[in-house]
Amino acid sequence: MKRDLLSILDLSKEELESLLDSAASLKASRAGGEPAPYLPGRTLGMIFEKASTRTRISFEVGMYELGGTALFLSSQDLQLGRGEEIRDTARVLSRYVSAIMIRAYRHDTIEEMARYATIPVINALSDREHPCQLLADILTLREHFGATEDLTVAWVGDGNNVCNSLILSSALAGYAVRVAAPEGYLPPADLVEEAAARGGRVSIAATPRDAVRDADVIYTDTWTSMGSEDEQNERVSAFAGYTVDRDLVDEAADDAVVLHCLPAHRGEEITDDVMEGEKSLIWDQAENRLHAQKALLVRLIGKQETLD
Ligand code: CP
Ligand code: NVA
Image 1 (spheres, rainbow, N blue to C red):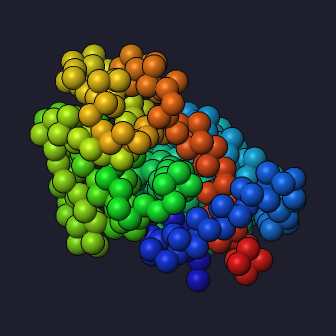
Image 2 (cartoon, helix red, strand yellow):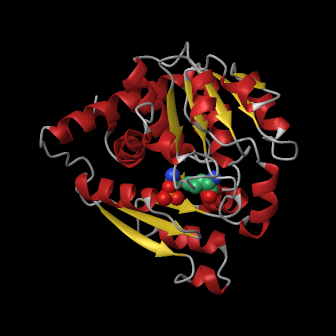
């Protein structure tokens, strides 16, 4: 039976833990120069409706390092761009490749791909979630703090796809999530309820300061996600006061760290000095996309026991 990763909640707590253990061991063996030929002959089809630096490169390099191959498929170059249906593309790709990774505007598109594909489908960002990002984020927090259960993560900014996956991940990683977002940019209520129903601890704070007070982690992302570019000006106004700057970081716990999924807009959601500062785990976070996704790929299309 094929497994997909459309939402971070497609993994159980135990599966997430074992996946991150595998990621840590892949990271260590890579640092030691050991090869990791766990996916010989496997091919990942990577469909992109939107731009990407980290996701594209980490999946492509990851497949290469695992002994497999990745195909970059811009939706504009596929017949998809000329109206071929998702369900037809899903079935055809299933005859050629071992798994599909897709970055799409609409979450529905990814769900439809998964429904018709007979191979695993990975959500590489939709308007609803960005589960691969959270795999890397939780790996990063585990490396830094040892465990995630007792942490408080403050999200400051747009209640967007990354925020949604962070909220849902509270049910798996155990950390409390506090969200500060302006009126009109809060995460969907149903998603907060879903996280709570699965045991997540999520609250909405009145201000960025309330969210970050004594928090262990401050996480932010762009105010204008891909696809919302025409709202850029009104968003910059709406998010006034939501910049993660040194003053805000000082409200958090003394040993707090700062995350950003990137790409960043210095001077908007985060200041240059915070990005470059000693509390920033941003570059480890970006690197960990590679290790976490390699572990995911082995789990979905390899022989997991090779990594256990
Ligand atoms: N964080 C992230 O997904 O980055 P890209 O858009 O560059 O892939
Ligand atoms: N929220 C951002 C994340 C980019 C990785 C976007 O959707 O553009």
